Structure formats: structure tokens, C-alpha cells
Length: 211
Ligand SMILES: [Zn+2]
Image 1 (cartoon, rainbow, N blue to C red):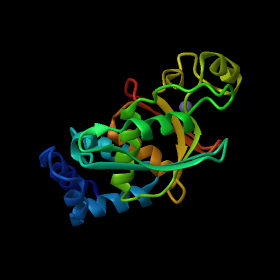
Image 2 (cartoon, rainbow, N blue to C red):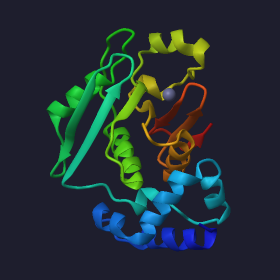
Image 3 (cartoon, rainbow, N blue to C red):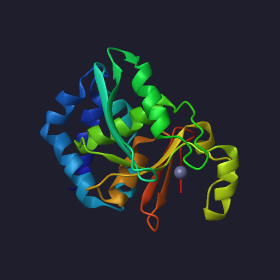
């Protein structure tokens, strides 16, 4: 797929109303083509996209489902799984959010925090773009400041967004790690870190930055 047709796809996407349901968008053949391209292109996909100089923002392009948002998480450290609708009819649901907070706790200390709902929405957006509704493997989410200090030797950042409940390290079975990284980068929703050796992508809802 060349940059010219990509331009068409993303112009199409950004011209859509915010209220347009993602289902309608995803049924569009050009959107499907873009998604397949993301899946197959791997590294360089977003580099090529950036080179077109498009004012592309997938954040505007794909509107989140308003009625219902569902997520399936697996905590790789504890083996816990959770499949839940955490957002319904315009509101985040208390009980599912509590369950998510617990699954995404600091497993070193057992400490729980409020996970940023925007982080969950970001995961749902990535899945929507991939037309995927599988499990998301969480390798690390919330960390206390103390745990984060302990993990500094393993590469944890000093000012880690994990400490604020605004970051998660994930992989998506069946999705190439590079494709996941490229797609997350294109969403321009926050920080994206690529850790191929440890087989995860870091996503956070902080400032837009990449490493
Ligand atoms: Zn991380």
C-alpha cells in the first residue's frame, strides 16, 4: 500500500464526525485496508506515514464506542484474567474499574491504585483499529514509588508514569510487537516505549514521546 492511498484513508478517517460509530468506520473497505497494512507492515509503517506530513490523528479518527467498552486483560505476573465491560452508556462503571485496578496492581507490594480510564480507552482504541477483541497481556501496570526504585536497575524510568497509574506494559497475542508499537505511536495519545527483548510495548497517557 503506497503513501498516496494511505493519505486517502486517513483523510477519510479525519473527515468523519467524532460521533460516527467505530463499527461504521471499521466496515469501510479503506479502513480495513489500512488496518491490514498496519498489521503486515511492522516497523517503518508509521515512519512512512509521518513522511507524508499528514495532520493525522487517529485519536480523532476512531471514536470510541459510546454505548459499551469491553476489555480482556491477563496479568502475566499473577495469571489473573478479567473480561469486563468497564464503560456503559456514557459512564465508567465502578465495580469493573475496581476489578481492573486490582488486576493492574503493583504485584510486588500488592498496592492498588486508580488506573487512568484513558489508558483503558487507549487499549480499546488500539484494538478497534486492529479489529481485534482478544486478550491483552499485561506485564506491568501500577508500581509504587518503592517498587519503581527497585526496578530502576531493570530500566524503569525515574519519573515513571507507572507510579501514577497512567502506564501499562503490554503485548497482544497474534499482533506483531512492531505493528503494535507503530499503531500506538500513530495514535499520538501519550508515551510509547518499545522493548523487543522483553517482548512488550509500554503505553502511557502522559506527554507524547517515543523511545
Ligand atoms: Zn512501562
